[in-house]
Image (cartoon, rainbow, N blue to C red; front, top):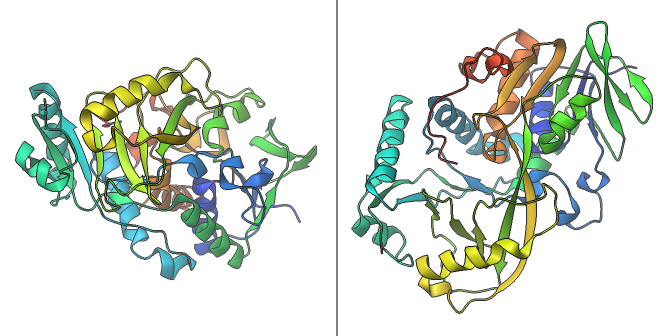
Length: 388
């Protein structure tokens, strides 16, 4: 039997889409994944998985500077609160907060503008905080040069691996089939595109691209454009340490994106960097700049060595927001791409919304017109501070 729905990519977004389609009663759903290590039954360590969810820090936030991202996070949080009852897995949602730090008046104004957007979306719990309040929230940070910040107690952490496994097992219980380790390509067809898996063509009513950082590469096989680019990000992890508490809020310097959190007894350190190659090979060239900021901004870490590090890929769109909906040049091809580093936290919402678009012709849980894939062709990208 040919599948009615083929999802390419069994990461957290693809698995969420599969679950939400099946929950709505869709049948004959097949999820294809070329990375055999992504199979939860595989014996490979998690970091053998190429997908971004397996390499993420597990941050979750509602603080954004654009209306659609705030609403996506609020929608996702509603599902996170019910995740275990829905899927049988604990998503690990811990609302420890996100603390954004402004180092000058301009950055503080941007945080204030973002707060106004959050209020317009109905988010009332976020707030602007003074340096004194910052010290109370995270006394381990140096306040030198800090003008103020913003904080939201709904923000915090999730467990991406648990979320992805929860969606897969819940989808499988509803009849979804997952196939790992297969070579997937797209080809043009009469109604848009069709999928070839290990050389065998599959006829389906709908093809859903959830291929993450490799989404544009997948599309090129069918000579279709997708404005999504892989961008390399890295994480450095300290040796096991207790110098910072496990419930410390994610702390982010708004100016350069340096941020840190505690996970599993280690401090994770991150900072955007202009890497020469967009691949999964860890590049130590970024470490001196990272450590310089770490030692100046978090004095407690000056004598805590780095033990390991790894790289992952964001899937970045031109305006830093997801592309959600049908492709403008292939009516049976649906996109959930370009989340720009926010895919894990928005996966509950994106999966549900795309299932509505595919099955009902439109999303009705949330107005996602601004996320339409053709907005760049129309010259109408989303404008606003996405607080990357």
